[in-house]
Image (tube, rainbow, N blue to C red; front, side, top):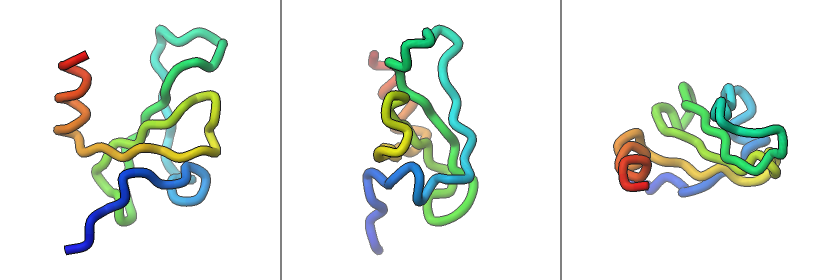
Length: 73
């Protein structure tokens, strides 16, 4: 089984996802954005990127991993 990458370029591989930002976010762009991947090799994963660098990499998490992380913080 081939392991999925832990991060992918946002602009290349995730061009069709809808990025969401927290309603608590300010206009200063110092937050993270998340997106659900619906198709392709990363279908079903959660992508997370830095809002200051939308062309930069996005980290990929399984829904279970993301839920554990957010519960811990």
